[in-house]
Amino acid sequence: MTIDELQGKIRKLNSKAGQMKMDLHDLAEGLPTDYKKLMDVAAETYEIYRQLDEMKQQLKQMENSK
Image: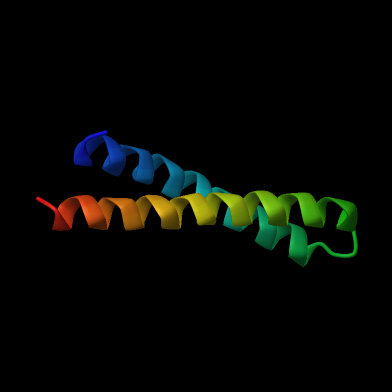
């Protein structure tokens, strides 16, 4: 994977991460309604941010090895 390809994936995932953050926020504001969805939405949000962090670290390594 090239640096440009990784940057594109990061941009797409960053957009999705922002949406998930807003969804989690909206869900939290509506508590206790839909509390049963909270763990699923939180887990999905966590996973997206974990992947995003991993990709950013990979990008930094690729840029430093140029």
